[in-house]
Length: 306
Ligand SMILES: NC(=O)c1ccc[n+]([C@@H]2O[C@H](COP(=O)([O-])OP(=O)(O)OC[C@H]3O[C@@H](n4cnc5c(N)ncnc54)[C@H](OP(=O)(O)O)[C@@H]3O)[C@@H](O)[C@H]2O)c1
Image (cartoon, rainbow, N blue to C red; front, side):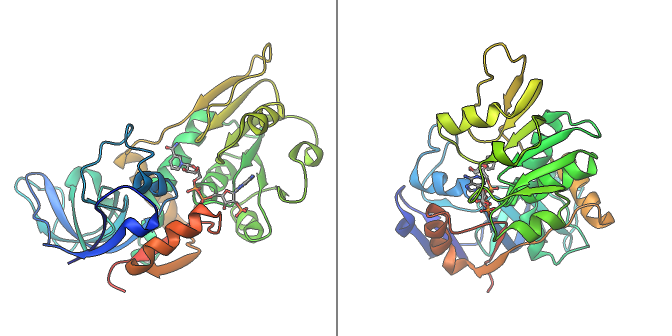
């Protein structure tokens, strides 16, 4: 089978499409015929070695955290799933034609979207869910979502809108229509306007989804009312002294129950899954290069069988 692997850390040229043996599911695992994985920008750091201390890796490493596919074999002791089940999950090694995963990580795929497109949901959806949960949004509060045009942003805007917050979202022209469709009440084109100039007073909550320098982080925190909240999935953001503000950095964790809840929201139409592009597995290195120059936005689906 084909698998997108790295044999060493480095630039995007280390990504190779290897022909390797199909993995065998062990105790409690399932074998998935992968319909798609999706590209997550954090995989750039996995590939170049920047995540080495946080995420233990063994080389060669098959890339791909998001999986959508069909179960084709059950490992010993698996009674919760059946061959033929269409599933999604946050796993290791999904950028391949087949992948093994713990059965407990896999949840039923949403019926509302094509199976491959459902690969957009696990990592980005769970990060958005956990960040919104951490923000403890209350109906009527004003939340500024910085980075709403990205893969996580798409889900975060929808979840904040569902929480009946007033959503103010940053988006450049390429993402504005999607962000508006996802439920943003106000858009700020961060490429043309300073955020502070576009806001009608301080917000209750900032949700930051963009890597920031110290000055940008301080500027973002200054937009929050005294006693408000800042949640970031990238940098730690410090509260201005005496502001009474709480700040938190969220590092996403795999939570199949939350993923199942996201699937239920997708199936009920409460959230939509709208990938921006589809590419064959052989183009994964191109996506990594594009990500390094900021030339990607939204969720990109990667198809092993294409
Ligand atoms: N904490 C965690 O556990 C966790 C998990 C996954 C990812 N992450 C991190 O979260 C970040 C976002 O991930 P993602 O998958 O959503 O990335 P993404 O899809 O690449 O989105 C990035 C988006 O950020 C927007 N953006 C870029 N520069 C901006 C700026 N100066 N101001 C406002 N918006 C800006 C762009 O929006 P436009 O299209 O509008 O230009 C772009 O679409 C990444 O840094 C990733 O590494 C963290």
